[in-house]
Length: 425
Image (tube, rainbow, N blue to C red; front, side, top):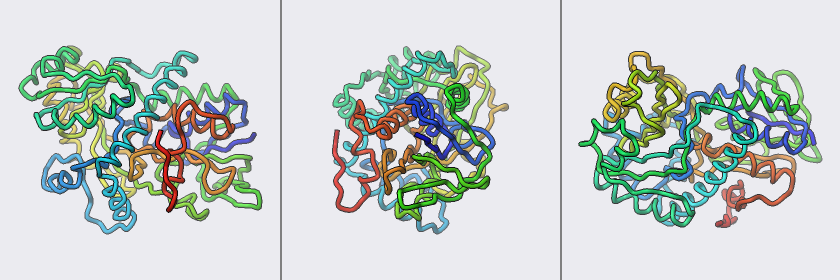
């Protein structure tokens, strides 16, 4: 079949890869001048299946109120009136129950664990290198309350068969020796030895080159304006360079997905959640992290990428605003320097912001929707890098009409259709 993938981030490129492996004629269209130039470009770098969890969690409403008055808060809500933001926040708050959290986290971990396996296959089959390391993730707790609060996550990890280690302060330092000088700040940790790290942008650009060798056509710098609906489904994508026809269309446009499919009657509950990162060169390797450390207090990931440290996180609800706020850099710097003081040259740190396309329940939307030849692979939020390979593999299975290795029914758009009940795994 002739398949048109709309979106050239890590989700779109991995989708194109698997579809091309199935023998399809694939074209990828993206508005940027190169693949991986948007949210994919400088994300936090961790591939963390075990840490996959929805932002909508019990206790978040009260925490959000406290964060409003903190200088270094992990969540920032801009006061501008925005109906889309209000609607999305209301839906997210409805998911902040124990029952919904367990369901949402369970399916997120399921997809993320599968994705890690798929990424391993890609790496083994192609030899692709992207500054990757397989040395686990350490979720670091600065307070005993955070240690105690990990119990609900451990329960889900056990149900999903995910390996984990509960560590005291000394155990955290043994796993990450660079934390030695921050001993007094550590109450404990939860280590997930199966997690990985890697440069998402590097992976995306290299995989795109390999996809070209499989026959995939990449059309960058092309604006996607609308989907043309005919008697037999979607007939073409209207672009700044004219109509692009196909047999199947895959929407992997992140935050721009809802606008594109709205005329078809699809209301994707996706809202851009702005995140920040800084990337700085390592100047003291013995003080630097070995893999990823998740600072639970600030909700920030500190990741080793070759000879660099990537520090990313926070959630700012500000619509499509991509402007850089120096106050956010202060928070990122505070987190990394308090734990790995002097490991990187912060005077050369590069600040970046990206808009993560997030659903109110934290789970991406994957599968057929609206018409028979339209498929979605979007809404991955902060976990696009973690879930990319698995999401693409699931998508290719659904397009081919074959069974997937994991449960996929509760990943579809149907879970947002009134009256439909998502199936649990």
